[in-house]
Structure formats: structure tokens, C-alpha cells
Amino acid sequence: MSEILNKYDVVIIGGGIGGIMTAYRLSKQNDKLKILLLEKGNDLSERKCPLITKNKGKGGCLKCANCAIMSGMAGAGAFSDGKYIIGTEYGGWLTDYLPADTVLSYIKQADEVLVNFGATTKVFHPNDELKRECLKYDLHLRQTDLKHLGTDENYFTMLKLIEYLKDKVTILTRARALDVDKNTNTVLFSYQNTEVSVHGEHIVFAVGRAGSQDFRTWCDKNGIECNNNQVDLGVRVELPSIVWDKFSKQIYEPKVWYRTKGYGDVVRMFCFNERGQVVMENTDNVLTINGHSYAQEDKKTKNSNFALLSTSTFTQPFKEPIEYARYVASLANKISGGSVLVQRFGDLVKGRRTTPERLAQSTTIPTLEAVPGDLALCMPKRQLDNIVETIYALDRIAPGTANMDTLLYGIECKYYATRPETTDFEINGCKNIYAIGDGGGFTRSLSHAAAHGLYIADKILNS
Ligand SMILES: Cc1cc2nc3c(=O)[nH]c(=O)nc-3n(C[C@H](O)[C@H](O)[C@H](O)COP(=O)(O)OP(=O)(O)OC[C@H]3O[C@@H](n4cnc5c(N)ncnc54)[C@H](O)[C@@H]3O)c2cc1C
Image (cartoon, rainbow, N blue to C red; front, side, top):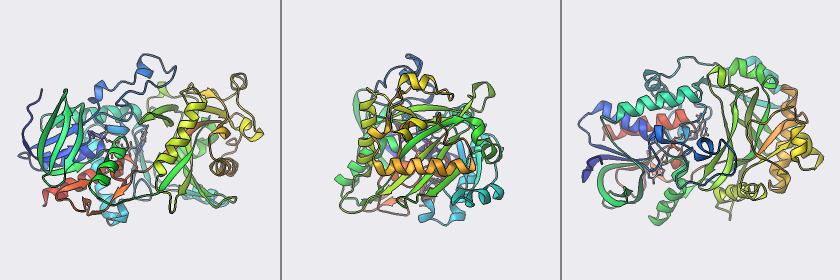
């Protein structure tokens, strides 16, 4: 057991990219600082999803107390595709608080750190010709510089960075923060079957999506105002990679958004994975969909996939967008007998279920073993109509998108942690207690969470 002190200069809760970058910058700038990083999941090399390692992807999720995909050192991004956005047009809301050039500068600094630990230097640049083509059809291409580390390179970069930090920072894994006393700056956490209390002169909540519900509960208990009422709900689309390769070959990640004629809602294409795989993810015991792709040629598939999400922003009196999304996703889990659904686009528009026999006829071979079924039984009409209309709109710029055998997996949802009221990210009513990254509702990408981690470290160093 690592020696645990009573008192630390900084306690970081969460070992995702935000927490790791905070620890990196602090320890690099001042090697005298006593830093403790608590991570409720496993060390990166011990993060193994039993569904993948033991059941070879078959059967339902085992609903582990700490999901190996979402929790553990390197956080939610550990097994991600490692798309690294070098821009501020999307990826989070830090520009609501800081000048865009400051955010961009921190994103670039975080990128340099990753490059020092092995990340690629290759950058994909925006393409105005494609943007123009999208505009012809009332489709909008979001553009920014982008890197693609790939699932493998991303993993090994983070592995090296964490190994480097282990000499400089006390990192405790399977250590779950249970409470923070905002009056005494005491952090209570469970570790190796005991409860431990330490004092942190500075405390950083970097808890990601896996910790956002507990963080919300903590805010409510401590009378801290929170807001954010947006939720994105939809499906993961999978199709032959050649359908979108005109885009993916030039800009790697096409991010197109569309305002539907039917409802006037925004539907956005998100998280494009060229020749990738569709994967299941478990967030607090609800199974949802995601996707990734490897950089290594021998691990590539014949399909590309992307999320297609319809955005809803709720107004009074409804205040529980996360519960709403979880409810819809859990309906899909119920209908599929504890798994996730897959449906051919052609079956969906004909108003019929995809049966195992129909799926067997599909010319697009699924990369995830999901249960063939009917998304219309669980997805609300408004979002489903939006998805169908957008698929037809996208078909104009990438013909083949609206084919019979385009596969739709559900439910994919992105919900954003409720954002606490802060002053320069110091939580209102607290002294030296900060919230950063996805868990604080400020970011939704690796690069922005990483930049936020560096920013908060500088703030602490300058305090
Ligand atoms: C499958 C997948 C693919 C993705 N792909 C990309 C991509 O290609 N590009 C991109 O930009 N973004 C991607 N994202 C999003 C990206 O991973 C997140 O935006 C980013 O990881 C947020 O970083 P973070 O440090 O804020 O939180 P996280 O990475 O979520 O880390 C938070 C950590 O805190 C820990 N924690 C929570 N509560 C506690 C507690 N009480 N005590 C101790 N520890 C706690 C969690 O276990 C977790 O490890 C992807 C996400 C997923 C799930």
C-alpha cells in the first residue's frame, strides 16, 4: 500500500485525461508539491471488460461496479479512437469562460505533452470544398484541425504518461472519493476496504461522466447551483466505409449538422470512425452505443460508423435530461433482453422489425453483436423522425447513406454533466475546490478536458 499522508497540496479526484494533465503540469512545474490522485477504477493495464476478455463480446453486459470502459486510469478516453480536436469550434464550452485563443493555446500545450509520450504529429486540416458541397443541401460541416491517434496509439501514449507520473504523484487506484467537506477541504475516500480522510489545500473534481451523478448529488447536498438541460439522443449508423470515404480521406472526421424541416431541431453527426467498430458501453448500468477504430491497418474493418444525435434542450419544469436519456436507453436494453438493438434503415422506414433472418441478409455486416429489433419501440417519435430525415439529407452528400442495409444501433446518447456555478472554475461557496472536464459539464472531448486540466494546474500554481 502506498504511504498516504494526512495532508496534500493538491488532491485530484479522477484519473481521466483532465486529472492526469492537472497532475502532470503541477508536478512538472513544482516537484515539491505533494499531490494525490484518486481513481475509483483500475490502473490502465488492469482495465479489462469481462464481456470482451471472457465472453468474446457475446451476451449481455455484466454491469461491473466500475465499468472498465468508462472508469480507471486514462478515464473514458482510454479505449477511445483518440481523435484529438485542435480547435475551439466544438468539443466543449470552455470558450464560454475563457478567450478562444487561451483555450486553443492550452489545447496545443496538451497536444505537445501527448506528442512527447508518443502521439502522432500528423494533422488533418479543414476543407472548404467539402463545406461548400454540404451547404448546397442545407447541411453544415464543422471544421477544425484534427489528429487521429487511433485506439492503440492513444492507449500506449496514456500508458507512458501514467508510468512517468507514478514517480512524482501518489496515484491510488480503486480509491473512490466518497465526500468532500467544503468547509475543511477534507476528502473522504474508500481504499482497500477502509475509509481514509486527507486534507487537500486544493481539491480538483475531475470525475468525468462516470462520476457526474455523484458530483451532482454532492452539489445538491452542499447547496451549489447547477444548470444544463441539454441531451443528445439518437443512434449509431454503420455502413460500408466507401460511402463516406470522400470525406474521411480528406478531413478524417466529417462532422455535419442539419436543422430538420419537420421540427426545426438540430441533428448532428458525431464521432466518425473510419473502418472502425461499433461498441457497447455501460454508464451507471445502462447500456448505450459508441464506436472506435484502430490506426493499425490489420485491425481495420470494412465499415465506418458515426453517431447521429438529435439535440433537445428542456425548459421548465423539467430538469432531469440525464434521467430522460437513461430512461430511453434502458427501454432499448429491456426490449433487447439486456443488450442493445440493431435495425436496418430499410426495415425502420417500412415500419417493421429487423429479425435475425433479415439481418442475416444484410450486405453491411455488423461489427457489434447486437439484438435485431425495432428502434421505433423505444425511441421517441420526435427524435426518430429527426434521425430518418437527416439520413435522407446526408444521402445527398454521401450517396448510399440511406440504403436499405445501413445499420442503426440504439440507443446512443450523449448527456452532459450539470455544470456547477463557478468563478474561474472555483466552485462558488468553496475555497480552492474546482471542477473541470466532462464531469463539471465544461467539456466533451479529450483535447478540451486535457486543456482544462493544464489550465487549472496553472491557476493553482499561480495562487
Ligand atoms: C468510447 C468513447 C470514445 C470517445 N472517443 C473520443 C474521441 O475520439 N475524441 C474525443 O475528443 N473524445 C472522445 N470521447 C470523450 C472523452 O473520452 C472525454 O471527453 C474525456 O475522457 C473527458 O475527460 P475527463 O478527464 O473530464 O473525464 P474522464 O475521462 O471520464 O475521467 C474521469 C475519471 O474519474 C473517475 N472518477 C469518477 N468519480 C470518481 C470518484 N468519486 N472517485 C475517484 N475517481 C472517480 C472515473 O472513474 C474516470 O476514470 C470518448 C468517450 C468514450 C466513452
